[in-house]
Every structure is written in C-alpha cells, then in structure tokens.
Length: 174
Image 1 (cartoon, rainbow, N blue to C red):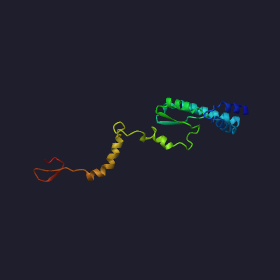
Image 2 (image 1 turned 90 degrees about the vertical axis):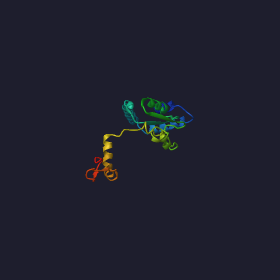
Image 3 (image 1 turned 180 degrees about the vertical axis):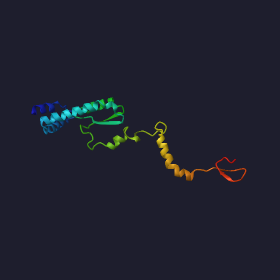
Image 4 (image 1 turned 30 degrees about the horizontal axis):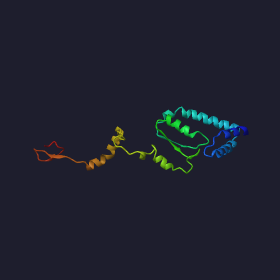
C-alpha cells in the first residue's frame, strides 16, 4: 500500500513550488482509508460521473464553472474546458494562483456571480428582447384582481334620451 501511495505522490507534478505540499496532503488523505474503502469510494465516484456525464447536454440552466488554475490534485483546467464544451450555457472562470480548493475565502464569490451569466445584473434589461407574453391565466388573474378597482374608478358614460330627457346609461341615447 505504501508503495502505491509513493507512486501516486510522485506522479503529481510540481507547479509553482507547491507540488510537494499537495503530494503530502493527498498522501495524508489517502492513508486515512483502507484499500477496500478507497476502492469502494472510487467506484462510487466513477459510477456517478458516468451517469452525470451522459446527461450534461440536457442542462438548460446557465452554469459557471470555477476552477483553480494551479490545481495539483485534479486536472481542473481541462475539466472546466470540457464542461464548457458539453453544456450549452456554460462559462468558466479560471482562478490564477488558486489550487484544488479555489473558493477558500480568498475569492469574492458574490463578485463572480454578479459578473457571470447567472446574475440578471450581468447584462442590461432589454424590454423588447426580454419581453415574455403573459399567459391567458395571467390575464384572467389580473382581471379578477382589478375587478373591484375597475368598478369604482372606471369612467361611466351616460347620455340623454331625446324623447324623455332623462339620463340613460351608455351612449345609446343620442
């Protein structure tokens, strides 16, 4: 087991002088699990990844993938590019100098969201392009809600019956 951990540790590349630290951290994490537990967890991850990857093209919601540009544990930069190619409305944010855990408190996540396609503030509202036709149900609901107000505030038309001189409702008297 320790030979396998040694091979895994040495297989991690050194980028920016942080490779040794990443190798040691990964080794400590892997030593926490027995080989059986590690194999089981890896099998679960592979099965889940296969199920999710098969359906990435069905995602219709906007997606922002945030990845560390200096990830020593996983190929995050390549994975971000792959996801951008498979999901229609996907954008990526590569954080230079960030490692495997890019959202570690040093990154302003609120700013990332506000600058992304996830935020309605990321582009100006266009009343023509962004107009959505209300449904018949919406029209009916508004009509019902405004009913009492219309009866009190709407204009009324009256005219005079030419034969009797009396006021009549509507414009038919004329």
